[in-house]
Image (cartoon, rainbow, N blue to C red; front, side):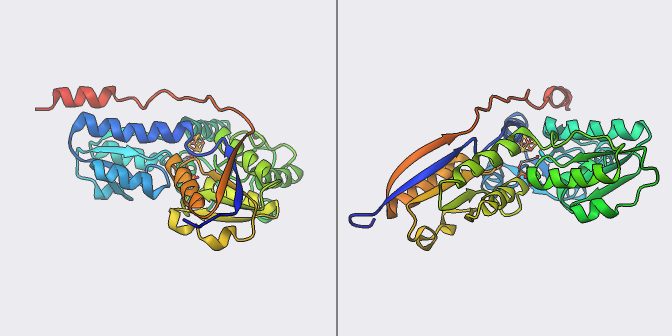
Length: 322
Ligand code: 0K2
Ligand code: SF4
């Protein structure tokens, strides 16, 4: 604690932290652990946050990257980011009791891609190469799929018939960058079909809007979340696009006194996979150095809620187990 600390105003972005899809996915793992009372296997981090993963691991969840690491017949949970059809098939062949925690909004993108493919259109998937959601989405579509992640790629992606193409997007992209990519696609392929930026999910859009608003007044921005989280990184980019230095805080030790040096107003937010506890820990850390005034800046209220992951098959299997 510093004697006679300087004042610091913290603008707290709202909405921030967990979205409905993340809450649903975490609950699926927790429910499965309570129901089965034995290890449950989660393919990939259930959401991209080490704090969340460590907590579930402590309760008995086992995180793996490949289904090959799961014993036959075990309980297997798919992460919020979704999986390909090949993964679904392999899980069925191996006799896993599957809980699919794919966010309903990611699932909606899968269905949209499948609908276009069935109608004979080539599908351009806008997203980040190598990201787990994109592996799932591209692997859900039977037909010709192209993945692009920039305007440059929109201008060069080869398609067989420009009259029969469509695009879909990853749910956690930058709204601004994606708009530019879509504009380039539409300029090149006037007949292309797609949803504008609507398949970037509500939570991603709201968190980007909120951080943009606080960045107008804050000198620097703290973004709580993990380095491998797409939506969290996009919040840092929005802050940077407003000319503000952003600090990605995975853990309170990432937050240093030098980051707030000379600042009177700091912004604070959290990605959709980052627990609100991290925000509280950031505030506690700042309060050790400065006399805080916290002002919450709410750009919209979120009331999204998804039905829980269906556990009925798992319950029946457990009831019939010898
Ligand atoms: O933002 P990412 O897609 O990397 O994923 P997380 O950080 O885990 O956030 C939750 C989103 C999951 C699916 O959209
Ligand atoms: Fe679903 Fe969006 Fe949350 Fe991803 S970020 S889990 S798509 S609500």
